[in-house]
Length: 146
Image (tube, rainbow, N blue to C red; front, side, top):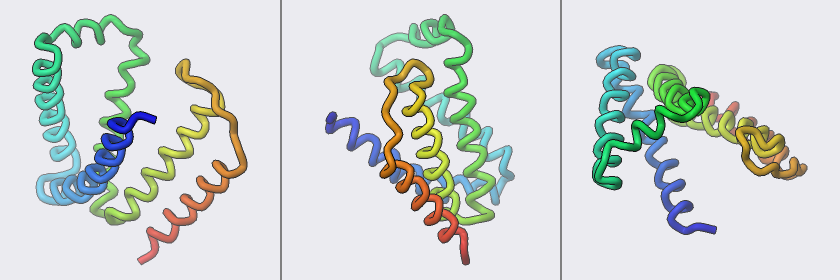
């Protein structure tokens, strides 16, 4: 197991909770689409800065442009996530939004692992994984209750 990967993943999870709340409030103030678009610009600037500092070059953009277009969907999916949390957070709350987001994430991850989609290693579908997803879905449903 990679400790930096675990720490970074946990940190991202915590940041995601804050992001839902912040984007929900931002969307309420200036509009969902406007908040999403501005956040995308900020993300692009931060990403470009990290690339430049880490690699001392912009060549990563050229390398990405040479990859199959289907790999670019990572950016589209990221945009869908930010747009969705900006809209949903203000309507169903941070907990409900995060609970559903995590449930969807794990259901998709379970399917991707099971079938080895995108060239990833196949990982068996065990009963305890299914039970975990079902329990998480139940928790998400409970989190939506007011």
